[in-house]
Structure formats: C-alpha cells, structure tokens
Image (cartoon, rainbow, N blue to C red):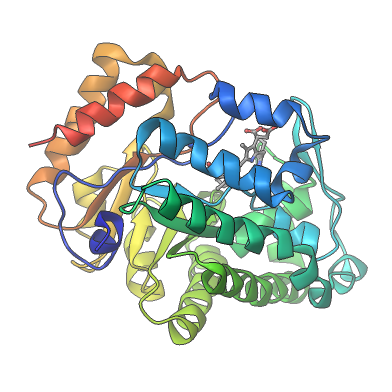
Length: 347
Ligand code: CP3
C-alpha cells in the first residue's frame, strides 16, 4: 500500500511520508510558465489539462508521497454562484455576503456542471501518476471547510480580524447556520465527486478555525467536519480524510476525537507530541515546519526539521511530514529538495 495511505490507516511509518501544502505554485518556474499562458487563476483551475500538469510538476521534480489536486478552496462558492475574482498581487476578491438574499442566491443545482472540469483534472492526474511511474504517490482531493469558505464569502476576501463573520455568527445565528448548512451539504457532494473521479484521500482546509471561541469552534468547525466525515465514510468507506483546523491549539484534540478524521494537520505553533497526545492514538498528525524556515534553508531549516523529526520519532503514532501552512512564493526550489533529503534520511 502507498506510504501515505498506510499512515492514514493508523500505521507509524518511518521515515514518515512527506508532501507540502501549496507544493504546486508560484515558487516553481515551471508553474509560472503555465500560469503566464492563461487569462487568470480561475481559468487555470478549470482547464483540466493545465491543472493536471501543474499538479504533477512538483511530483516530477521532488517525488513527494502525495499529489494534491490543483484547484482552490474558493472554487466551490464560485460554483454555487457567488462571485470570485483573483487580482494580481491582491489575492481573492468576492462580493460580501451579508443578508438573507445572499444566502438564498446560492444555487447547489449548478455546482456539478461547474466543477466538472475539476473532476476531469482528478482523472487526468490519476492517469498521469500511473503512466509516469509514480506508483507510490497518493492523490489527495480537497475542499475548504465550511467556516473558512464562509470567511472569504462574508469578508469579501482575506481579513485581519474576521470581524464581519464573527459578528454574523453572534448576531444572526439562524442566517449564519443556514449558510454553514448549505456549504456543508455542497462540500459533501463536491468531495464525493472527487473520490468517484479518483481521489484516494481527502483534505478539509479550515485555515481560519483559530479565530473562533471554543463554543463557536465546536458549532462551526467541529460539527460541519463531523457531518462531512460521516457522510463520506458512509459513501466511500476506506477513503481517509485529513482535517486542518489551523490554530485550533488544544481544541485540535476535541476536533480529532469528535470528527473522526484519519489525520489532523497542525500549524507551526503546535507542539506536536503534546497536541498529538490529546488525540485518539490511531489519528495521524501532519505538520508542521514553518514555511519561513523553508525559505531560510540551511542550518535554521535543518534545526527546525530535526526538532520535528526528533519529537515524532518515538511517539509511536502515524505521522506525515508537512509544513504548518502553505509554501510561500519566495521559497527557493532547491530548499525543498534539501528538505526532502533531510526527511527521507530520518533514522
Ligand atoms: O499545491 C496545492 O496545495 C494545491 C492547490 C491549492 C491552492 N490553494 C492553489 C492556489 C490549495 C489546496 C489551496 C487552498 C487554499 N486556497 C486555502 C487553504 C490553505 C491555506 O493556504 O490557508 C486558502 C485559504 C485559499 C484561498 C486563496 N487562494 C488565497 C488566500 C489565495 C491568494 C494568496 C496567494 O497565495 O496568492 C489563493 C490563490 C492561490 N491558490 C494560488 C495558488 C497556487 C496563487 C494564485 C496564482 O498562481 O496566481
């Protein structure tokens, strides 16, 4: 069985399997070359031949244990009919959802058609991995978790304090719950279609989970993830799911136990063995090198990597080496190669 799937099945594989969030992207010259040839980022995500090509680029260069579907978490709200634009150097820009009409306008009936190119990408990547000899590489499909997707819809893009979404969760709880339910249902269908197309594992990105109070974390991070995991386990038994409740701190333990995900991605601030000890023993942990240590490279990267490997070596639980958040564009590609050598040499 593929190393990543063994790990997500509960086995402590050593050296650990390794892949990196945002492993396809602007730090790679071959990505920038493909990106330069398309109108915008959404066009790249919805052109299967190109999306499959950029998914495979980091696998060819580094031989990671996982390929992650090239798409974006904001493709799902886009497919629901919410506007989306990626402006150069500015990140995503969306209309600000703030009322009943905004939630009522979301139309699940159009999603399957609009995400059809993503499913074709999944099929092309599976074929590509097989024909190019990457028999040990696992294809991960993904979606944004409902809370993080709602963050971008309500804030209209990124935010420093997420005041609008937190305000809505407190002041308009019924409306907010309706939005969360719509996104949860749509995520189940979207992820299920990815598995049908060939995704071998799934990941749920909740990048802003850490801005919520414990009570709201349980309601809007744990509950939707629990519902998504239960539905997918029923439809696709044996397909593992990784949750990434970023900056959850000690609530990552509650998240793992309650949602029954197979793996939990931890951010850079998490002290891996201590947070891992709060989870069921078979739950894999994934993380958590600082992406800026990868930019620095050299002795600093080696020291951070060694600290993570030393902490997990004797933990006797499944571990996947990754970053604590996505690769940043200024990362020198040769530092990624050096990191893989360090992880694969782990004794
Ligand atoms: O390699 C991979 O990890 C697969 C593809 C992937 C992308 N985004 C490609 C992308 C994945 C899994 C994501 C997830 C994603 N997207 C998250 C969750 C993880 C995280 O980073 O917290 C979030 C919050 C988004 C939303 C998003 N998409 C933002 C905020 C931005 C702009 C910031 C930036 O880096 O430019 C994007 C754009 C985006 N998504 C790019 C890529 C490669 C850059 C766009 C470009 O090439 O012009």
